Image 1 (cartoon, rainbow, N blue to C red):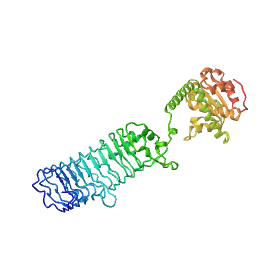
Image 2 (image 1 turned 90 degrees about the horizontal axis):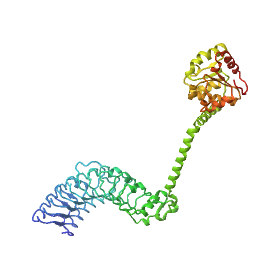
Image 3 (image 1 turned 120 degrees about the vertical axis):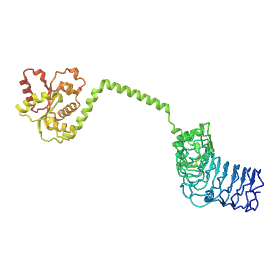
Length: 511
């Protein structure tokens, strides 16, 4: 009965046709479907109503159509308010519903109070593409509520700006999605999380600048991808790896960059045996400017490749050599390096202080380990401060509170005429004592005056001094005093120490 001038049905299908399977009413001038219009068509399976002027859908207008599986309502005048009346609730066995080319548009993505397809749990194909009207549109995030068996959804060319991330939480069986010819600037990977069975995706003619959303979209079953005429410039390895089942991809009409960023993509096009890249030999460059229009597959990417095996060889060789050098240094040169480190610090300190020397505040700075403090307090201080009148600087007594310890040490050494190092085995093991003697020895060679006095509280064999290279060198060239050798004749020891308190030009002698 298609292609006539019918504008009303006048109850023609209320009864008498209980066995009719297919009814074609398309290309007429029907304007409304009224309540119970098809009540007598209990066996009807296919109903064609497309290319009419239908703008009114009464509630329960499809009552009685218990077995209908396919209804075509495309190219009518149906608006949003009409489908929200619950007009489709009686079509419990419907498999396919076409609503393309109508006026179904939503001004925002707010939640609908009554989802229009909530009773269509058997629906497998839904098309609401190419809706007429002006302005941008949205899809309410619960529009597809109830469509638990939906396999195909087509919503192309309705000027969508975005899709809510929960749009497809009601359609876990979705396998084909067409959202082409909309105005998406970006798509969230979360949008695709509820539809892991998706096999075909159409996203052509949008303004997407990248396919990076695929990387975290978990579309491991995607086989077909059509993404024509967008703004993709680089197709990365991560994008292709994220769709391992891909067998066909159409990327015609994009603006590719002809540089090393696309080197892997070019190699993949030429070498992969799984995926057909449609019309790849006509892909052209859009950037850089001097290569615009050049065929993408003609790009020479030889300079982009890296010899991984050579890099592995160099890396392994360098690692082995570094290990050998570190091992050799640790076993044979670690003490020399430690000495060099402290000497460098001394140089820094000397450079900082040698031109800022204030008048000597003390006759001597006493450098000692805290374990040797009893000897310093009971023997050294009474003789030098009590009997000989020296002004001594001791860290526990004269260092400025709150000042960095290294600054206190340097100020004390450069603010004293002499530095007396009270040396024992514990002294040699102390980090701060090592720094004190390094700063003092550097001052000694810098000023060319005998500003350093070494007093040994223990007889330490030369071989035990071998790790302390600087100490051995000083002992060979400079005066030192030995408390154990003094024995019972301590008066001579203190006399020699007093004589050393007089600053002289540098010279060599051994006591």
